[in-house]
Length: 225
Image 1 (spheres, rainbow, N blue to C red):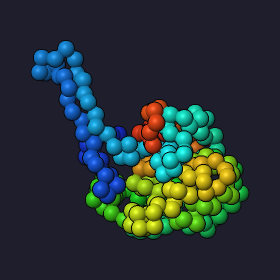
Image 2 (cartoon, helix red, strand yellow):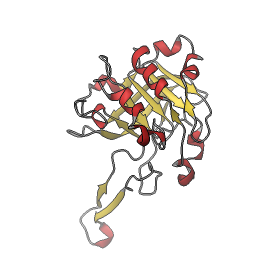
Image 3 (tube, rainbow, N blue to C red):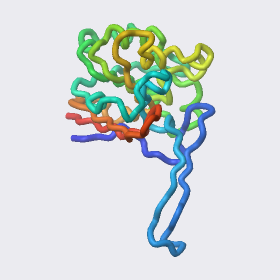
């Protein structure tokens, strides 16, 4: 069975504090005498369920059109469940609790429980849970099969600590100048509800191939039992 882990895009979705809102602008409408219904979208690439390419925080990193397509397909997903409250940080011990499975996984699906309050946009965007710098470094340097991480919050990084510290979590995952190994893709604002309590066989998360850009909206589909 296939289930969708992406949220629909609309102008009223919750966004990272300070990010511009999306706009759907009618271009032609049958109801106004047009030949068809067509629409212009103004979309901020880091609104909604999306993927961060290495170029997002690393000038020499791959843009979303250049990331190999196999990096968006996952055969060994692992859900990490850890209920966190406002400002909470996922720590290395929360991953180590899953034993050898974290070393075999090719994507870590991080469920903090915050997806449950997404309908309250103001609360969802206010000091949401994220991961610690130590956790980001662990994923990048020790979990060598991991190609991507996905989280059920607006960002993998604290909206308070990240800007203050110059975004060390994103850079630990994306910046190849820090480590001589592959970058890790980041999926944010992911819907965990359809997969919790289920066994995930595979995840497909293909982006739009936007030339030269730092990310893309993405439809994430999980094959579950």
